[in-house]
Length: 546
Image 1: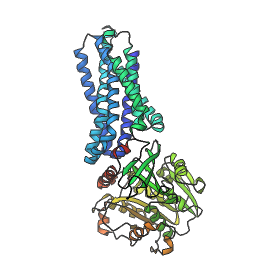
Image 2: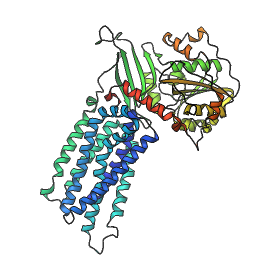
Image 3: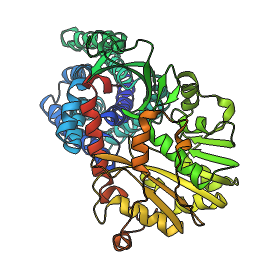
Image 4: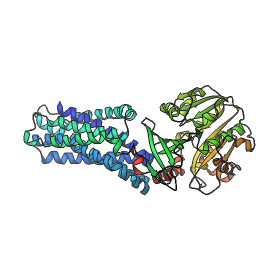
């Protein structure tokens, strides 16, 4: 009974580690099919090697049940030590791996996080099968040597591990601390297994390793904030940044980051101690920013969307914003119309309220997936703003014709929809963004696109679309009266003229559908990878550890 309990719980730890690995890797390598392919392949390779090694150990120790059981008891402690070691090093080496190759680096990162521990934990299954085969008489021994029962117990434990990690650890603890908690748990499990009366005192060597693993993981867990420098300021170019709040969630790790500009004459001080910026950061990507004490939006793409919106739909009665983040865009429309804001993360409202002066009374906040909401709501809107990102990229299931048809069905006869898309500056004839425009064109008879013409690595693309003719963009000086002056030049450049799209290139691009979505394979994933590398170069390595 003792050993089957241990194998159940190590099965739980195995899958919990896999879930946490996906979240640890996200700030460094993003979210993509390639990243998950790496996680799954490393997991399966580790399990296969572990089963093989466990079988070899079982054959070599055949007949020596005490030695087999002692090794069985020691393996969770060894795995615990490897997990703690990976937590010590990954905050510092994952950035160089990401800068080297987001796909190859992610594979190596998975080996560091999962490889060793999963090999050891999976080897335990074979050792327990060997123990059960020798503990039964030939007449009552299972035909499979008890293997079916052992793998059943281990797999059911894995199910529990997924549920506990997803619904208990992720919402309550940082990824760093959650991983250390699993390490601590494995150390305790090894100590528990060592107490088996069938293990002679001379073979209880696992106890000292279990105690060591418990101490190391427990100390690092308690000192996590100090080790990761959560109370420290980081120097980035000519400014300092500091994490003032961190919120684990099902939908990414949210950080509220404050940054202050250093005084060039005296780099040890800031230019103005009362002035600072505050950013809403999800998995290492900034998704909103405000300057203080002015309490003014400090990102120009929000102003670009409002300028386009006010020109195409000057007096909306009802506005739908898909994507909350810091709540900057709804604040610019406060008091002008009825506003619905949809976001899948329930924590965004409280964070926007506490750190970005968002007033919950100005909008109806709806916790739901954007696509589900627009498909089933009966409401009609004069304007819909799509500002949705996951790990710095537009989720691929939100760029299909089916989603755009649902959006079109939610618009009033003269309603408009605004898109904010981040794309690389260079666009190939059959790139993801040409496919996106082709898909929009298949749903909306009228649309216009704007972006900065200067050469740069990345830029925001702004698209306004409607079922009826759109007015010519006519911006006047008074339109910029409530916009910080530092953004005037870039906004005028971005919105100077509609971007002309070659009709032949557009016709060559495919329409993206739920059944055949080529968006990540036509260059979008490459853009995400390049953008992720920009973030890796910008922040100190320790900053992205979550």
